[in-house]
Amino acid sequence: MKPTKKVAFYTLGCKLNFSETSTISRKFEDEGYNRVAFKDKADIYVINTCSVTENADRRFKTIVRQAQQVNPDAFVAAIGCYAQLKPQDLADVEGVDLVLGATEKFNVNYYINELLNTPERNKNGGQIHSCEIKEADFYVGSYSYGDRTRAFLKVQDGCDYKCTYCTIPLARGISRSDTMENVIKNANQISKKGIKEIVLTGVNIGDYGKGEFGNKKHEHTFLDLVKELDKVDGIERLRISSIEPNLLKNETIDLVSKSRAFVPHFHVPMQSGSNAILKKMKRRYLRELYRDRVTKIKAVMPHSCIGVDVIVGFPGETEDHFLETYNFLNDLDISYLHVFTYSERENTEAAEMDGVVSKKVRAKRSKMLRGLSAKKRRAFYESQLNSERTVLFEGENKSGYIHGYTENYIKVKAPWNPELVNTLHKVVLTKIDDDGLVRFDFVNAEVL
Image (cartoon, rainbow, N blue to C red; front, side):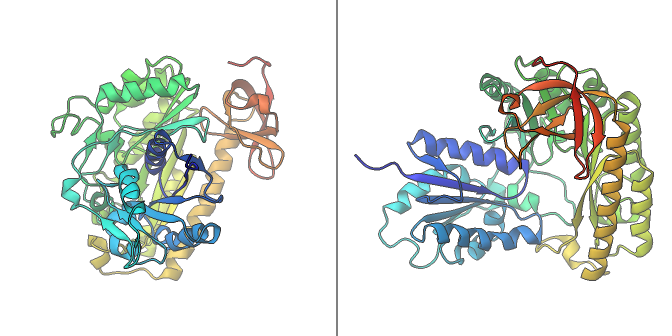
């Protein structure tokens, strides 16, 4: 009897990548592979790459080295966005056997099985199977589970926007959606596994419905999707991961405010608080619309959590432009920031623009916004003290504590108790600790 082959996965980047890695890993398990942790010895290592930032590119080589240190004879495959954009760069990395682009990655197990039977694999560098991105016009559904108390459910892929700094359309292709029927089927499958929370994910989920049946006509809208998912039995929480402000409609906000399962947490990319920079980025809104969305959310859900993506150091961003962004964010009723330092990406309009901001200035502006984020998060947490919330507890023992999140995304801590894992409890938030996490008192001992 042949010993069971072991496979390990490493995922860089977004929630969408995590959902796809999980789906791909299940294919290996269905073929009899045993999935192990990436730090453990495996026969095959699959790295799902990201190319949103320069740092993600650099990390790839480090991860390959880590795999080789554990097993120098292991088979290493690279898939994902960086693999689509720079396949030859990845294939040239020592130890890489296989590089798969946007359409091929879901068949990684097939390609690996073929190459494992090739006696001289990797003799001349990694083998590449990569398509022209215009061929990435079909949809593959995905969802993650097993590692977390929540699941990432992919509902959409690709993007038709032409933001001048972004390589994602080049890496993932045109905007296309899962069918409503398949999304609901996947949500029901997740529910049957006892998972309490689903996070909706995609490249541009507010564009849901486009390409649902292989055409550009919207058979359904994102609002339709929210309505149908709210009816799925067994899922206690539904969370919208990230949605463009111009696609977050008032009707959706109102529906979430009255929803059975959707939680009061929105992550809305802004990128800049300067209209001049937003126009250079070719974003599809101005700051006035962004303010309107925040105002609307807070009007119907005062306790809601609002996260913001922002980019600093975009070409042509003067000190005045940056201060516009800083002051705009400082005045907004938001809860935290995800700050990205602009980095030049090949084949984007922004990379050719004048007005390059020095790395030193970019770092300074990034630090200022990270400080503002800490202030905003603290103020939001303080506003929620003495309120009653529901916490979903996670499964990891972190230095003797168990962590969890309230419906409005406040991170709490309590002494480790395995009986709390993947359970929901009513609590009263009582105190912010030195580490920025919130302590609480149980309202009652019952599991919800």
